[in-house]
Amino acid sequence: MTIGVDDDESAFSGLHNGKGLEESWLRICARLKDEVGEVEYRTWLTKIALGPVDDDEITLLLPTRFLRDWVRSQYGDRLSDLWHQEVPFLRRVELQVARAGDPVAPTPPASRPSAQPPVEDSPPARAPAPDSRSDLVTALDSRFTFDTFVVGKPNEFAYACARRVAEKPSSAGFNPLFLYGGVGLGKTHLMHAIGAELLKTGQVSVAYMSAEKFMYRFIAAIRSQSTIEFKEQLRSVDVLMIDDLQFLIGKDNTQEEFFHTFNALVDAGRQIVVSADKSPSDLSGLEDRLRTRLGCGMVADIHATTFELRISILESKAATSGVVVPAKVLEFLAHKITSNVRELEGALNRLIAHANLFGRPVTLEATQDVLHDILKAHDRRVTIEEIQKKVAEHWNIRLTDMSSARRARNVARPRQVAMYLAKQLTSRSLPEIGRKFGNRDHTTVMHAVSRVSELMERDAAFAEDVELLRRMLES
Picture 1 (tube, rainbow, N blue to C red):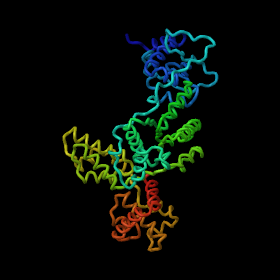
Picture 2 (cartoon, helix red, strand yellow):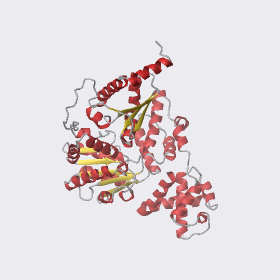
Picture 3 (tube, rainbow, N blue to C red):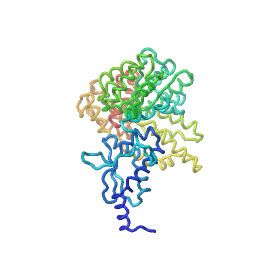
Picture 4 (tube, one colour):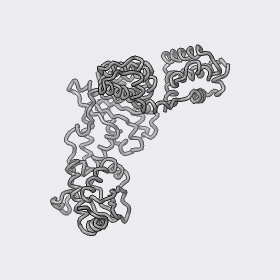
C-alpha cells in the first residue's frame, strides 16, 4: 500500500507522541553495537541522545563538538540508513551539539531491548581493553620495502638513516629518527621499510601508526577507562613509529601523552621513528619540550624530487609492470608531475591499467588523453614573473636586477637561480626564458642552469635555498 502524505504525518506523529520513536532508537542502537563491536560502541556512540523531532526530521544530540564531528564523519551515513529503515518517510537525520535545556532521551546503555537493567549504585561498566598491541598498530604495507625505494640525491640521506635504524635500532645519535618533507616524497615508504626489515628477525616488536590514530586510540582509552593498558601496550614495544606528527598540533593532551611515551621508550633504550611535513624547529604549535626532544636525535630531510629521480622512479615501476612504456612518455610525465611521487606513480598505474584493459600500446597521444584530468590540474604552471619576484625577495635584491646588465655576484647568482627555476618549473623554451631576463641569449640560460646544478651538488646550504624556493613556488 502506498502511504500518502497525511498517513505519513499521522504515523510520524504516533511515533513521536508514543513509545514508537524510542523503540526504533533502541533497535538502531542494538544493530550499531553488533556492527561496530562493544569497545567502539561504548567509546563513540553511547553519548548520542535523541533530541527534538521537527516534522519529518530527527535530531541526535552529542555533548561536544569533537564527538559530534567524529560521529558525523564515521557513522553519519549509517545512522541515516538505519533510521530510514525504521521510519521510511524521514527526510533527514541531523547531528547537533546538545545545549542546556534540550529535551533528550538518552541512548540505552545496553543497546538491546532484552538487556538487564543496571544494578543501582554499581560502578560504571568498564569496557574491555584491547586484547593486544595489534589493536593499536596499523599493518605495514608489504609493497613498501627498501628494495622498492628508489634512491636519488633528494632522499639518499634519509634512506641511509632509515637503513641504519633498521640494522641497528637505538644506535647513538639515531634515536629518535625524525624524517620530514613534503607530501608524497617517501616518508611513509621508509617507515614501512624500517618496520619490514626489523620484523624479518622475529625478535623485535614494532608498532606503527599515524599520529591521528594515536590520538583517537588515546581518547578511546580515556573513555573506556583503559589508559593504563594503552600506556603499557605502547611502552612495551621495541620500536615505535608515528607518522604525520603535525596532526598533533593543537592537541595538547595527546601531545602530553606522546611526550611521556617518548621519554619512557627512549629512557628504556627503545627506538622511535617519527615523520612530519616540517622539521622539529618549524613545527609551531608543538610544545617546546617535545620539539627539543624530537630534534635531539637524527633529523633527515627528504627534498623535492629532481627530474632525474622522477625518471628513475618511473623506470623502476614500468619495468615491473609488464607493459612497454616509451622513454618519451616517462620524460613527459616526469616534466609534468613534479611535486608528488604518489601522484606520479598513480598516473603511471592508470596508463598501465588502460593499456592492459584495452590492449593498446602506451603512446604520448594516449597518455595525454588518459591523463587529461591530472595534466589539466598541473597546467597551472608558475610564471617566470612569479619566479623572478620570489627569488628577488629571497635574496633581497631589486626585481629590476633580474633583467639588468649588472654582473655583481650578489645579483648574478640570484638571477642564475631564477633562470634555473624557470627552466625547471615552466614549459618555456631557453630563448623565451632569456628574453624575460633582459633579452639574454639562450646560451646564457644554459650556462645558468648548469652552474646552479653544480653549486647545488657542492653546497648543501645553497641547495637547500633553491629547494625551498621551488617548494614555495609550487605550493
